[in-house]
Image 1: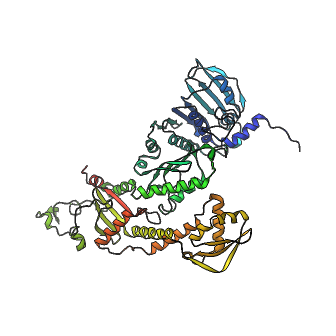
Image 2 (image 1 turned 135 degrees about the vertical axis):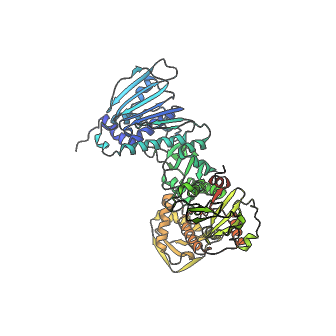
Image 3 (image 1 turned 180 degrees about the vertical axis):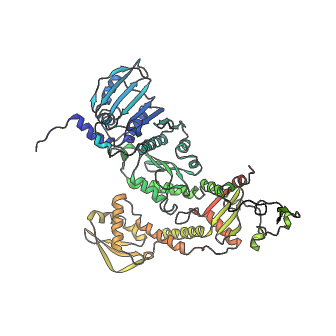
Length: 598
């Protein structure tokens, strides 16, 4: 077999397959360049989902004719010198423009602030024209037409125009969140425009532009630091969740990333607070020394590798859980909106024609006659035979103080259907699911007990020997003391085996070998061993569910108020062990709107 040198065009097309996977990839690279050039206004125009046209216009620093000629050549960049350990820009590989030019029709027009005229260059399928003078505003306009025309096989893997346009929109949203001082405008062939005006230092205002105004009302601020890493941003309360993880935005030194370690840490931080199949909403930014993170893992630069992944994972989980414990026990504002929609009379469909006698708003007494409905003797409100809500309450509730106290969850006023507690607050009312609330309280008590003292262990009659690679054995023994506190006693049994002598009593009969192998895999991937603690907490949650106040049980006022006070003092009580909300709050202003009083 004869070895030969590939042509420059083919080399660029191979590189383009790694860097430019779809129109959204090209859009991201061009926006990166605009931001690195110091742009404060970036406009993106597309047609055909970005396959027919992708134009990015910025007001950045621009390029001189000499720099423009180099910019379209591979591995030419102004952003790094000789080291990959101090990368402080979004782009640095010098591959984007030549890769795009090798598979599309690319034209660039640019001018610097001090130049009398601009410069332009064109590339089509890897063939580059000479730089020529051109009129231009300060900044750069990059236009990409007929993406992948030079590699038609790639076009077969493209999705519909709508799907590709949506992917570009998602790129713009991520970059808009990361750079609130920059104005972004995205326009498409369907004449729709997505615009994000600059918000300056108000990062939460930009997040509200992208994620919706509800995020501002349901977000908890996060600001934590551990060793050389700092975590800032906002995380949604557990009851403000979504059906997918698309609204989880993470940035490392300002770079949007989609890293599995970070996403796994977010999921772990919200464990037992969000229902299965639901995902939290979060915008998080990690700042650390560039030497401690490798952003050169993949040409697309969306993956990163941390020098100390355990530090980052611990920072994320600890900071989010602390924020949730501090301010996460509140119902999402969207819950009140849903209740409002359910209560509005216009949303109800009457099952029979309206009549005065059937109206729930009747102030008079009517009776049916041969000629229709006629008003009979008017009676005062006190003479109605309908029982009042107050007379339907238990005696101890009627005797209680009717003034709403200043407790966050208010004072119990009634129990509905032997399951829901209605409490009055200073500015509204709260409805509590008694079983879900008590379930959470019991679980938190059991979890505190688990962490406060060593977990009881059961000794195996015959130690179980688990054969493992020597590296896995070393990792397991490094955490032997932690496992022992959780009821799992292990010892080294030769160079490639672990002896299991005790297992947690709570787990009953357990596959010790499978448990040890699972912990070894977790340590190898994440350098943490939370699996055993997680299994114990899951068992505690199950026990709490079966040992809590059941639905259908009548509670005295004192019991209901005691439950409310304990909820206020217990972190995480806003959600049950399965992530469902334990209470819903309705403000007095919302109630007044229902009756047209405001």
